[in-house]
Length: 317
Image: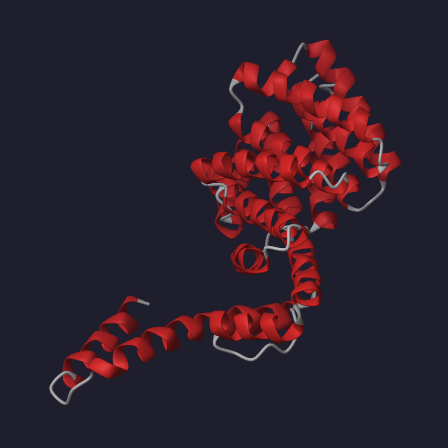
């Protein structure tokens, strides 16, 4: 249940479910389950970019499973510690973790998870601008994922290939890879992943000077990432800044007001207060648009039922 909720971007509910299971595991003194749950909770915090807490949980998992040196959970946990370092830009530490994980997976003959390690090693090469080596790792990873039908990992690999193509300014190939990734994520109900793909697609559309389309994609991505409190918010905001610069402040600000019902006063920063302001600004905008559309048809007779409808909506909330 927790894993499914996590994949759908319902991080708070997923954490609550995991914590409930953790209490049961403690009561039963089930160390194997405790190690697994600590690992899974770490993944949720990592998705929310709360990396210190994620590392604490991963280290708890490794400590509990200390006697299982060739266990798949140890390999997975090392891999996810590598991802945290990767997201923090500490590439050498990330690579060291990925390689430790890969060696354990080779010992276990765990081909699907070897694919995840190959993918992550590719990301390190990409960060170093070693594009040929990175694409080689991505292709090898994709082959393994396709062999075992791991669609979520296929989507992640396709997205990474798309980002690599963006860096190489091969926008046509980038868009094809990103749209393929997006389709799979939508089918899987991966809301956070969908938002990140839309953000990157928006960046490609900016380069192709399709500014209105880019704006639509980036706004959907921005609002989804704010709602989910998922990683990827900063790149989405950066892409919107680039769009405003390229498209022009007047056109961007007009589109922003049409979309949100509010004047553009700047993009949200990393502070939650500013982010919440932007989130709240969009919700009333939808109500205002609906209200304007109904005004021409309002009559004296229709006012009473309209009030009743509003009351019902409030009760539902």
